[in-house]
Length: 588
Image (spheres, rainbow, N blue to C red):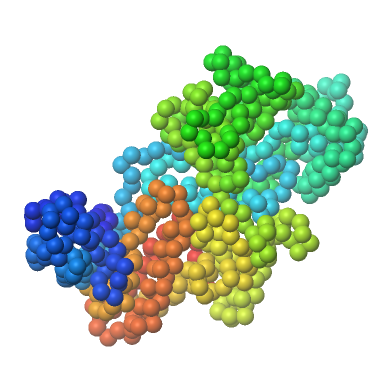
């Protein structure tokens, strides 16, 4: 379906042309005075200089061409030259019914589908997810869902940190604690055990202990570096241990991401691209791009237009070790070889912007990507506590993600039980659904690049611009529809009639914006625009609900129309929250 604004523009541009003016002046916008009209066109003001004519005269010429237009209830020229537009009830009802009959609710799939790889995970194995991993997962998942809804092929990659010194630290610490394990016997020839020699809890304790010790004990750190080197050279026992670390960590990561309703298509890590690094480095050197600087291998990526210093992109350290830039470039090489994407989008902390400027420029200079392949960086701000500093536990440590989820769920459970709105046995499951909305909506309703304050009390409130408020509105609609069905009525085959009141019209106008909002939010990679939209839609519904007799409507045809409108609004809300990565319960 065409967007509502496009249909209005179509009529307005034709009217300008018929009146003898350039069609491009006929662009309409949402009115900034909704008390006067729903849409407005200011083209006559802009055309006045070109045509040396008073803008009110141009506006009157245009409105005269629209006297018989079925889209509009009224089109009025207002001094000094505005054109105020009100839509007709018949046209709006027809548009609503068109949305209701379309399984995609009026959203057209893109005519130019693109293949996009979305890099939005980035956790390190052997370490628990913490609140610092939250934004990447939540924002990335919503972008993936938005892109797929628009008809693009979007491939989500977790991009694990599964290589490097952290592995050497774990191996070294494990050898300290369990020196008799067969993995440390260089002459061992048998098969290694199937079961890992540690649990996830032990592993999560081993790494920080090893990391802390390495900062104080130089000999210990040297052993860890050597263990890392031996692992990367392929020492069998270390490789077997590394596989155990991956197995245990990834199983736990999948469980925790599932609690956030986040899924990845690819579970690749830095280790997957090691084979590409030697060839990539040689290619950079053969092209004359990479050179030695104080023993390190670097590539200059600064440009004449730079307003700030852009350091060279370091490819290998002086000891020959790879860095994040190395593995990120090798990952681009692998992604182009295996998937040929039109775009690679990274959803990461905005403080890493310079890193990606260097990586992207190096990749383009070396022709690692095709000329029309887009490399994008969506940098997000930090999630802060009420003190304005990065969110911490009460003890001052970094909070584990599962603990944050547990705290939110407990708060939602308490509020649901206090409300006495659902049975005790259903309260836990409902609290988890509503708790997820509190976390995700609380994050996504902020512009991604901005820092925001995580306020437990506000995010879990059933009032205001929150996830629970959106779900409460959705459940309220579901409850009305359930009661209508209990009266012996069907929800199928209903027709929406022209509006009978201002709040009904306002609700229709908000629902009609759905396709434009989804399209624009994806184009601008801005999930917060969907949040703003459903908040306005929920407010419009609640005003309508309080002003309208729905189940008490005595005219059967009118009652069916109101129910049909509610079904459409419910479907729009549920589609939006699904795109944002959460869902609504049946009761709250």
